[in-house]
Image (cartoon, rainbow over all chains, first blue to last red; front, side):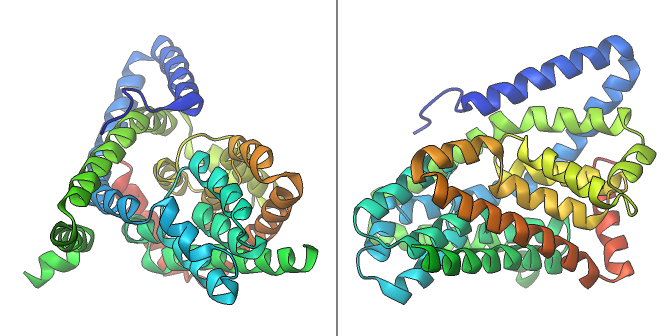
Length: 167
Length: 180
């Protein structure tokens, strides 16, 4: 279901307001230049759209399969090293807005999941996007996309180790 | 046929998954399609201002400015700017890609662009505040400080891994996607 007409939140409203103000200033300063800019933006959007659309079909399916219950089951109590690996993998693959992710992290902890599992899951969830790799490869390069995500996975492992030492 | 599949990997994988799910439980596939429509709708709501900003950026900010602020010899200043642009941003990572493209096109150093992308993904300030209120200050700080250090080291090392030709290639692609 399309739940809200404007699913933007405060962030989105801020972007719209800032863009509106800048657009107005630009328009008052130089009409021709502004129109040229809008045309460029539109062209760029049309070029990226075909890359984006199939991606969202995939994300829709993923979000349906990988539910919070599914994640809870895999990262639950006594999941140990396997739980850490699951956390990293699920976090890398799936896709979740932060306003869902962090409360889920808290819930996992309350349900008995250990800190390292949850840490790895949250970090990769936010910083690794396997779903985006295809798009990133098209926009930049495959090597760049893979390396950039690798850095974040390494970061997640470092976080896990630090959490293990400190908690 | 083979070429089509390779070019539309996501479409093909999604279709296969959708067919498999339909056999298991067709209500799930309906849910999946609704979720996709929802995601596309969210994207279409968020994306227009981003592209307007990119267009304006393109016509108003000269290449020399970007080169001096974030280019090859911008040093720590360039990195700091990349950090602030990423941290004071709003919107999902997907909206950072077009901005990264325009930065490359205007001559920003690739390591700065990578750093910007990584900061945008996980160190955005609105997210950090939310993070602290949910998972607590200590846990949040461990995550964020570690990731910041890893991102700085990572983006610097990463740029060194690319050859000149590869970087030129990336810039060419950026020119193409930036609406030229």
